[in-house]
Amino acid sequence: MRVWFDTNACVADNRYSLGCAGTRRDLSALGTELSAGMRLTLYMEDGAPDGPPELLLVDAVVEEFQGALIAHVDPETWRREPAPRKAG
Image 1: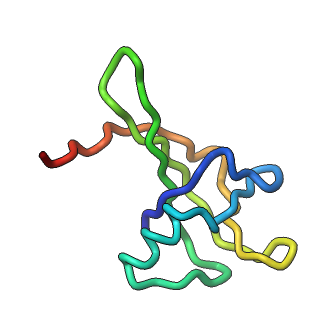
Image 2: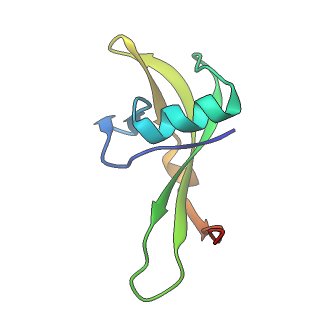
């Protein structure tokens, strides 16, 4: 399952908040609630000033951390792919 995240929402080493509006929007659209142990692919748009837009992606597992569910990313899985073209 792929959900949006914000690289600025790092709460500890390799751990990111899943409370951002974009994350909640994706989970709602998927009809899914987070639970510990769930595997996710996190994505974020990453503008390229001299090229086509890209997505920054990383694989993660949902875990409880300081009383909240967060994404613990696997640092070896960071990658990029072309962003889908927007309709219109």
